[in-house]
Length: 236
Image 1: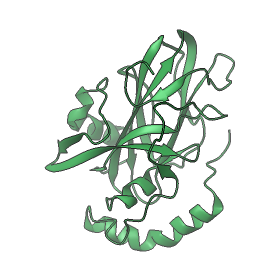
Image 2: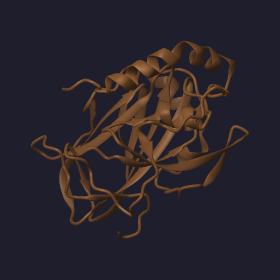
Image 3: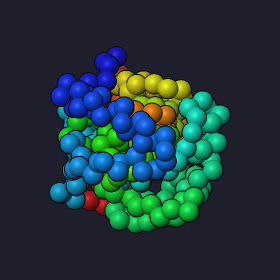
Image 4: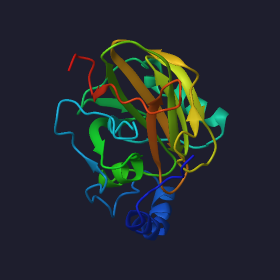
């Protein structure tokens, strides 16, 4: 198991910014008032599809602007997820730029592609001048398989708690205040169908840095790379 591997320069920059940002977060959803800088690890996708990286990590996701949420226990996280209207839409696929009304706020889905193995939600929210702490992030992507894949497992890590679905079925969850560790949570064996498969997660952060990573492992524990990733369910 390999620990979270944020580049040193990014980690130092994040740590330097945390005290002021934490104070801002405590005041509400204006945590990014002093921010607005482009995210250093996230870009807009430039191609219709992408491949998983050399270690199988999925780097392309649609991410919804953060929703206020508190508590990292299993009960608190599940209550926060259930409370959101999207908890009834675990197979729906939003489009880049789509907006939804949540708790009186209009929130937008954003297409993102990370330059690292993990998706840095702190960079994402800060670039949009949104809260990074006490926040719930939804993310979704579509894995296109050339043929049915049996006995694969979804392997994930998150900072902090998270719940994950594949094709609308909940498959794995992590709870409590935790750092991202590769393959920290692994689903039971499942089958990816030929064609599009929807992978969705809800990540709840308490304070400070927040991110997640995900990949599929085969029956021998090796990364699965024989698929493409896009942000819709049309054939690539």
